[in-house]
Amino acid sequence: MTYVGKGGDALEYYPCRYGLSRVQFRGPRRRLQGDYIAFLGGTDTYGRFIEEPFPALTEQGLSVPCVNFGSPNAGLDLYLNDPTIMQAAEGAAATVIQVMGAQNMSNRYYAVHPRRNDRFLRASRTLQAIYPEVDFTEFHFTRHMLTRLRDLSEDRFGLMVAELRAAWTARMKLLVGALRGPIVLLWFADQPPPDTDATDVTGDPLFITAAMVEVLRPRVAGVVIVCPSEEARAEGTQGMIYDEFDASAAQGMIGPRTHQEAAAALCPVLQDMLSRHL
Image (cartoon, rainbow, N blue to C red; front, side):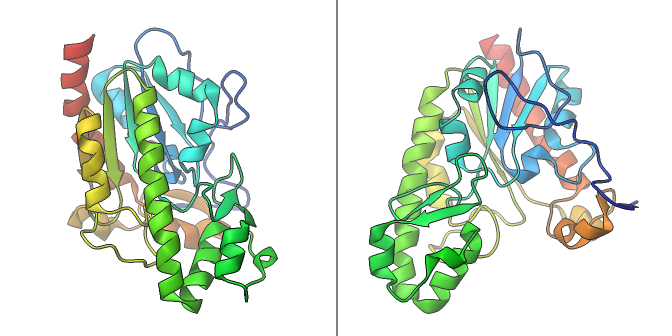
């Protein structure tokens, strides 16, 4: 059943911080001691509108503490620029990294907010030279800006996408290389990784292709791909918790049943890793 509140968020996320990090994560706050699994990722890892997101369900399946470091609209910059969370992930018995889009990170064309990575800050001189007709002060969010630039010129936009993909691959290698324990790369999206290099500004994770995921496979202990089953698609927003104001946003989110499917896919992979590394 979908619950609609009368104002404010109908679901309590118990926001919390760890150490010196300035990012608020989903709580309750966990003790980073002993063996635990760290989960890094965006909105779906955080579990917006979801009472029990897949990190919590994975904990139930494994009986091992799972710490949710997911953050709404997070990009790789959020983690690579946060020493506290990097240290927490480095100390984990295993880490699950949700594949995040390439748009929400600073690059040689534009800068994003260091914690709210979907917030566009400024265009570089290079980007301004490529799009001299654009007033970049009009934009506050990365996807809005990218949509506008693609509409103006697919050829020029292709240069940007190539840069974003190269930057994403380099930063993913950096993130994976900084962690000592086994890592599971999780693709959690409506569709499997695409085989084409399309430059559409729809869907998530934005601009990531199957080839980019395969480049990382030798560097991680496992790759898990989870897309909604037909049964999960049929349920729509059933079981999601949100107020009337967030109804349209909830329509675009992955529902509780797919979170259950993600946990079911992750548990045996993580159990095998833990048995070999602990």
